[in-house]
Amino acid sequence: MFEKTSAIFLYAISPVHMGAGQAVDVIDNPIQRERHTSHPCFAGSGIKGAVRHNYKALGGDEADITRLLGPASGNGDLHAGAVSFGDAQLVALPVRSLKGGYVYASCPQALARAQRLLALSSKPPQWQVITVQDGTCLVTNPDLLSGETLHLEAFEYVANASQELAQIGQDLSQRALPDAEAYAFFRNKLKTDLVLLSDTDFGYFAKNAMLVEPHVRINPETGTADDGGLFYTENLPPESLLIAPLLASKTRTGKADDHLEAEEVFAKIQPVINGKLLQIGGDATTGRGLVVAKVED
Image (cartoon, rainbow, N blue to C red; front, side, top):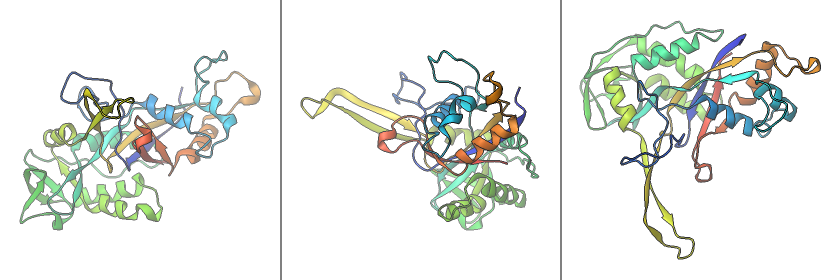
């Protein structure tokens, strides 16, 4: 039973490939997606595995790994870990804009799900989810508009200003990114350039606005491309924002001298990952999978 609940934001600073295996499609190596929304997601097992693998490098005590995150596979002393990471859900997606370079696009469905997870923390959000019609959008920054129109990729949306959306952007900018000066530009942009699309319009970008990279398989003997060696890999683009539940229970090692209450478990895991750079997913040697984590109190 989990006794301490919170949420963790994951902000991509490089393309991220959390693979879903091979597919018989134009994209050979697709990313993980939710079945019911088709939104990109990160499996909780992948997040936990990345934290466990890098726990010591992140500044954690190696002695805590087993009791907090469970023993390694094949270990004879089996027991459940005391920390659980749920699947990360999409909150905002960078979409190319005619003005401002890009915007952080979201939708009522994504914000409602984020609101639900943030309610797990000690500081539930005070804003309410707002709705928008297909073909229109809500904005907070008039400088993004051409007249009364917002241009995203090849699409035009009738735009309206929204103070309620400004409140949401302000709250997310404070919660989702570290306080470090290196993230000041992105905190401000998330606050000012958050755009709310309908669930339908946002779903199009969540499906089709990913970063797709061609790769060529090289023959190690000839140093040239193998015949039929061209393949395409899908990545979640940098500046994407996701949120996942973070849960803690008392340790379950069965050893009296190794016991920690849920609050103590959370107090140990939180500083190890909060504000830290994680590498999740594949293609680590090509700089993929870099995300910064921000844990709610």
